[in-house]
Length: 469
Image (tube, rainbow, N blue to C red):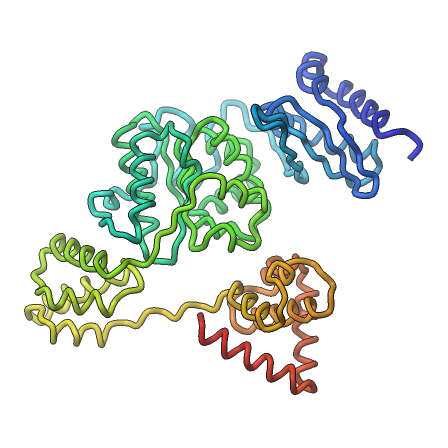
């Protein structure tokens, strides 16, 4: 490279100038400052005067900027923005590869959403919030295990303009009431602040809508719709793991909403630290608000939930039955509700009062809880303990022999005991491709045929993994 990086950046500016009008150039490109260029890493750092400035460049001129710097600096260049932040100096933000950006049809106002979410940007009363009106704070029973998230949720509903708990990230195992709680927050908020545009949806539906927007060339409408929301509630955010382009879209929606004082509420079956396959920049933002855990209901809460449900359904159940159920059904609120539904059904069908003997009979014949699938996290945890290596090294790209073996074993066991595809396993462990995963599995299988010691180690790992799901 004969020219200095500063000269090359000056050449970039000339190209920008020839591709935009003079007002755009003076407004958006003149304030950009060259900071540094790492030749080996091919990393260009430029500074912008504000977060808004950076986001505007990314939204309106991103493709032009990337094409230009790759051409002038001759290579696949990583672009880093150094964004000035009031009272905090500056932060560095990497610009991702360009997503296809499409022009919207004249007069088109709404995102390409599913039939249940077709309200264009407009008055709050025109938006179907998709909330469940039956899930409210009135029937969300408070206990020690849910007191913190419930209290925070009520505070947000009363004063959504406060940004102390933004985002609110609620996590916990399935069936403990996460969906009920966020619906209660949204419902109360709509009652107190009817002018707010509140939207509840699952991460899966968000991903479907995003994919449809790309397929039908309505990505800009999709983004415009979500950036108009005042309170965005997304359930099961862990379902975005491994979906890079969906995460990209959500990252920019998240940034826009939070920067403009909008509330974001997320639920997950795990804390951010356990979300392998989610972009680091998203995880950082998840952890920047309040992390609130919903735990399995304690004994007293189980009793209170049973009494509330019994009263609601018009049942008469003796206290010894309530005591028996609360002692024997402890995994989730959903399971408690299922038992009450079974008692009600059997009581009506057989015209019998509910007593302890009757309840014991029902519980004995009730469907057993589905055995929880062995998780990739559990496999990696046991392998890391067995071979005395760090879990992050197994998930990483280290080529040390002991880590490579631990990684290959994790891949092999994941293929045996999880429902993840080979591609998904590779994405989560070391960001490997499908062929590399198959090679790892083949390597371990071949060694197991001849290496008695390794076979014993794998058998021991299997017993531990299966015994501690």
